[in-house]
Image (cartoon, rainbow over all chains, first blue to last red):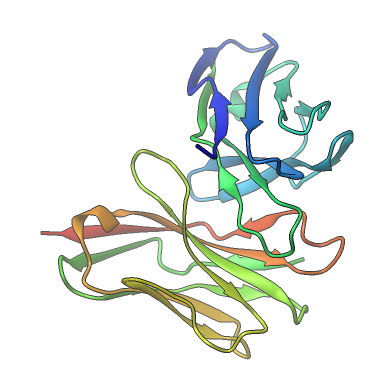
Length: 113
Length: 117
């Protein structure tokens, strides 16, 4: 089944404790991206990657890191999480074809206390 | 930069009735793509419909159709014969077709749709 897999689905952590949210897609998509969703703000892009070893900042990159060592994986790293990073996070991918819709993972609900 | 506005934070509809969700966007580009995504309580993001800006014909998918008014920069979603399973948050989104501009979807803030039995 073609899908984007995020793990974990729920995560509660404390301020300053490094964490990684994994994302993997099995559709051979070139493009991958991370979004955060907050009430009243919709979805905002954190980072994106057009291909392996090519990543760039989105609208809200502060406090996050990403890497794209393999085409299928695009982990999101929070080196020192803070409470303002409590949010719902989505990984998404699409083919490198103009106008392709994004395929989303099921989301990760992160709470930082 | 492009922006997407959904002016209705919440809407409600009676089962079997028709409802229209509004979306307007701001762009200086002539070529782009528009989407509606549905997010049910399971929080999964599900593509509802896609529209190519250079196509004048409005996209349809079963009970879902759009009214795309390019000059007015409007992209409303019509849901016919509403069903209980249509209850969800709906997001309108814009994606540029320009090289160097298509790296993200720009989302509106969403409209929460309630379907009353």
